[in-house]
Amino acid sequence: MATSAEKLFSETFGRNLNTWSTVGTFRQTLQAGLVGGAEAKARQAAELYDLLTTSPEYSVLLTNVDDFRKALPKDEFVGLSAKQSMETTINSLDAATILFAHSMVDGAAFDYCRVTALHAPQDSQADDRTSEKNACLVSRCCGQAVRG
Image (cartoon, rainbow, N blue to C red):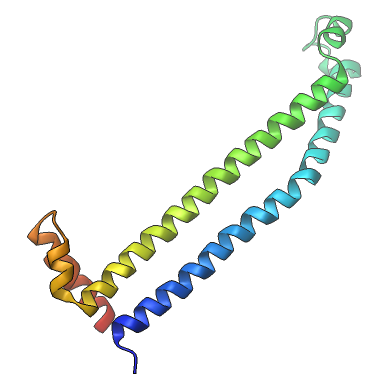
């Protein structure tokens, strides 16, 4: 028969595997959609370029459309717009992944401290070198949370 500490360890380990899988799937799914996103952004940028250079509503933005077209050809405008959007998306994906992973690691660390407190309360207190108060708090909180 498994002890409470062994059960908690197994549950924590399984939850961590599931969470890492979720984070990995999230990244893979968004990365797979980047190609379609880049294509959509390129279409939007092309439409914007056309509006900027042909629509009377936008004529107040450009004093000389021909100079604008020479300085920034449509292909370059579209490419820069799509590139910037994809870089922003990738940076956001990386930031979200770090946030998700950090949250998962925090939860796992706390649960593994609970495992230690359940399995060997005296060891969890001895390993906490920061203060006796923290050791007592971990033991009391973790033990109550699991037992009660």
